[in-house]
Image (tube, one colour):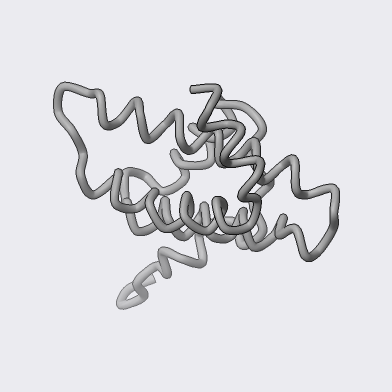
Length: 112
């Protein structure tokens, strides 16, 4: 339709599944099509959808997501061409997860 611009946020899943593997995390972030802003939005939505206050069994899931994001952060930081905007987009979700599951985040940092 002429004159109708697509709503980028509307194209993203509103309630994405929480990734449990690196492949699932990559697939989720691929939906952002390289946009760091959309990547952060997807991560925030996955965190909100699986918040520990919604269900206690989400706690290990959020700890695993923290570990996956930390690994991705390390991977991006170690790349030859560092994508600073991509690293910056992961900082807020990492911080949120570390506040949500501090012991899980601490344990996973020690293992790295």
